Length: 412
Image (cartoon, rainbow, N blue to C red; front, side, top):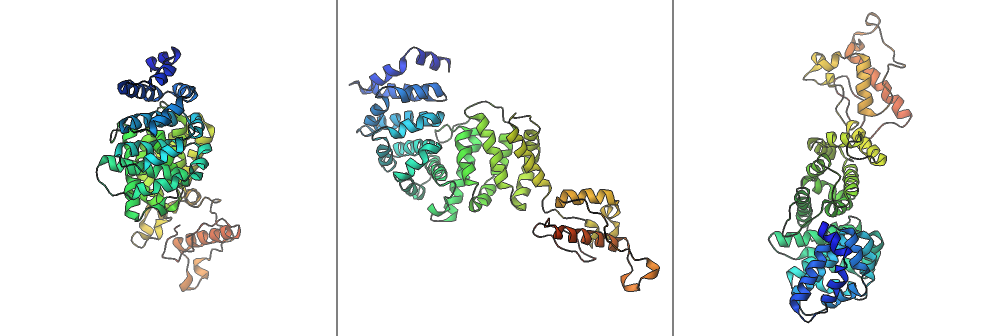
């Protein structure tokens, strides 16, 4: 990193661009390699490359040339600049011939070139200002055939996953229609989750280094649609998110944004009871508690969002008052809890005012017919049903809440 900084300050970038005009192929090759390496994880270098006079135009000349190996190296310059500095994305797509070259290289028969071209488009698609430009030039239509190409091996899976991530960014996660089969979509989403796992460990996969932010961003878009949520959870996304949040250190490319997106994904996934169960099993409660407590970020908005998710996951459709379970009955310890404790439990379960025995007529045992003689269990049921009536009156009842018979249980 120190060398990269020194090379930029000493004016190496304009010299390297001049080397791209050399008659020596080796000089052009090493100049491309040096430029892509200078851009890797260095925002200032990315900006210097994009701002170099005629620099991007020189890159385009290599992309439309005949040397496939040089095309791949030139694409890496574009890929790294777009990946590590969102501010240069508009300059890249504005360069004459750049988008046409990228579209053509996605469709080339050279697997390595096509893969890096898709990767570059994936990086560009994370820029909001560029997204509409990519859609207008038909980049989505260019990417769709990539996810339908048959193949095996890590490199093929990475190629499809990159295209899936780019499509997710361009469509805000509505990618289900681009796959011929749901199984194909599940494989692509599973590969994306696997890539996140490698990125969290700092490992390359299929010869590619994925920064956590570059994977979390499309996953956040994918988690917006109901069609993808279940698949993502089946693929182990909850476990990876929990790991990311627990082990987050606030270092690396777009670290703050990475944590924010991870919390946003957790919120998107917390809508159903089944997904909440998966998240609890993955240890998400403890991870989000730390965020809410300010252990990972001082961003108040993110802290409040984490606290909201935790609250939501503790107020869900939980079985209530197991003392009415036939197998346990009045021998259940829950059946013996006092009214104050029961009201606290009700508050957590239903998210409403504490349940109290308002307007409940307690019939004395000696005055009641044998068929309606109230015991402690019947009285408690009437208390709960009276509370339910009040909740219904003020529209606080959530779906699935119902009255209970004397031998049932109340659940949401």
